[in-house]
Image 1 (tube, rainbow, N blue to C red):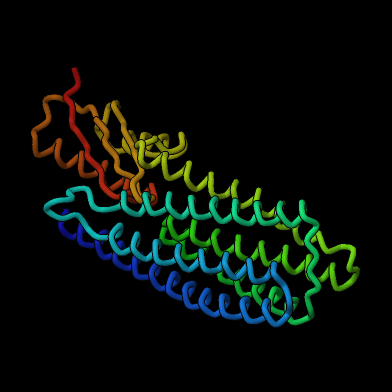
Image 2 (image 1 turned 90 degrees about the horizontal axis):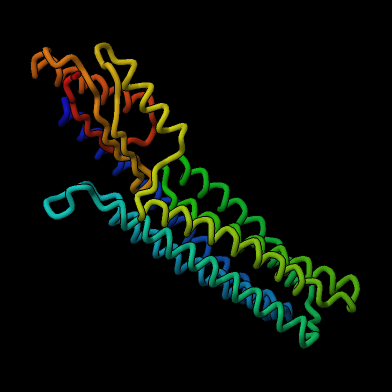
Length: 302
């Protein structure tokens, strides 16, 4: 039975990894198209802001490669050298994506600040407006698709990459406002710079949140009290379990690893105690989502 459950978990992880890789490859292909589109329309449409936005899309493409690597290694099953699997690699890759988001935001913010300081004037054409508009539409659709898959397979790495897509969409919004504002009134040429500066602060916030959540996993932080309470309630609901203690839960690659001690009648046979422990294990796996492995230690009632 345990081998069957283990095999099902490994199969689920393989399927989740495949979905994560598929959405990331789609994102990479869209990014390649967006890079070409932004560079061409930015150059022909005389918009330096759109050309800078194309550089941002290049950073998106780099993070796609990081995500693919993290999913390829992180979702591998345990082996002789990695008894608890490779999920930490996915967590570390999430930190890298969060750092890339912050670096991108700093780049956008510094460029916007320099444009404001030097009162840099651009006179873009409608072609640049079209390029920015198409970027907003495609990258927002890509964000929604990627974040949906990331949450479905419970991958912080894929969700973090989705936010990288949205940061690209938001920077394109700044370009769109700037180009549109300049076309409406030439004296509004700094509108895109102020919009980009505002967007950069938002992107930094998202990047910091991703890194903070990833570090929580790396330091084996416990999950929410709601998850702890659900595990305790489940264990106590099993017949002949008197009480529980020394419950420990950590998250690795978005999946919980649980250790719990249950107290039963000390006069019961080893076989009966083992059966009760298995009932606790199966109850927790059914009631709590994203559980990777459970260790149930049986203690006799004093």
